[in-house]
Length: 249
Image 1: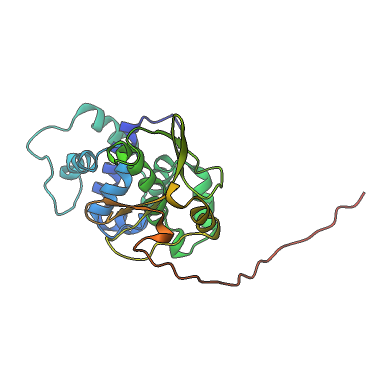
Image 2: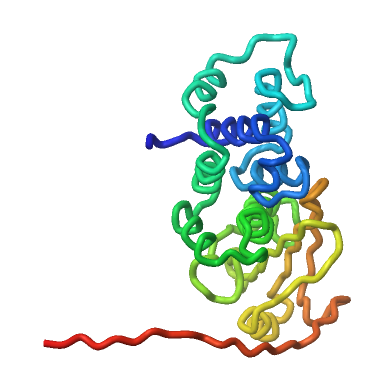
């Protein structure tokens, strides 16, 4: 398949949501259109309003309860993508959206198929991971503590935080980003994140992006272990299954 631009990915997301409507939302794991617009668009570093407009662009061509932009002709580049991808089945189209929106692409599709638990749904992974991180990258300069810092993405390093904020002649700051579908609810730190937060103290920040279901906003906690937040320790025992074989000569 050819490489798609960010705009094409956004348009295809709008086409999917228009064609499959409420069923499409459920297939991707979203509770409503606002959550889908916020999550998919922010994951693509785009505006939720732009995604909504693309959905409305296609609405006159599918049997859903909305009229969409029925008073004007569809834009040429949108029609081209509808002609190319509009006949895909819901499963094939959903796989395309998941692959193109997620930074991990096909790897996450495999993980989702192997682990079918609700906690591994596409929507949940986007809200708690990529969408929240892209939101942070988009607004961090507006946060007083970070406005004069350079941002380094450390999500793939396993160091106990998502971003290193650097500034000349000052110790770096560590930022762990969490996302929430609603405006209230639980936030979990891993054992490593907790240890790093305890070690760095005032240099560790918990940046929580809240309310993807309606309109995202954020709350910043500096030194979260010594803040208004109260963390309860919990332990769980996991049974790990392994398979062994022998290789002869």
